[in-house]
Length: 135
Image (cartoon, rainbow, N blue to C red; front, side, top):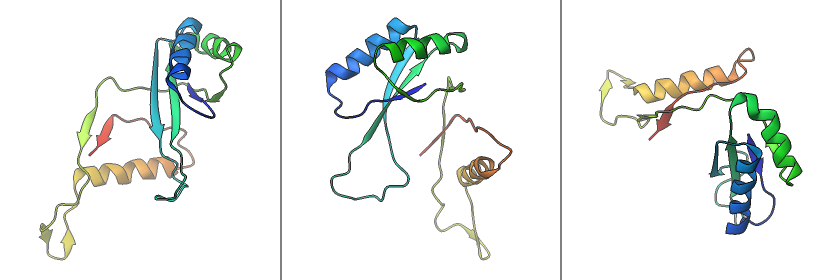
């Protein structure tokens, strides 16, 4: 589950979210900064969007959602998801100076990004999950 908290993000709100989520039956809570792909970089006055992810067992999803809503939290997204237990670092930078004829060498990371983009664009694919951490 993802929960967006509108307005300021002081430490008290974060602790309250953790407490509320755990009391509602969640197993873990994680906060992160998400980049808005539609926003142009470098705009002044731009605020970071903080998102809180609440993790629970699939059978507890409805109860955790209800418990958080009763405590004043509004979900922006509630879904089942596959969360990797291990990550694989994948390099995506082009290898400079390595050309065969006139064709540049493409790294495996670039191939993987192309594959993931193609899968995400396919109308028959609902969700794409992976354990790659691009560096």
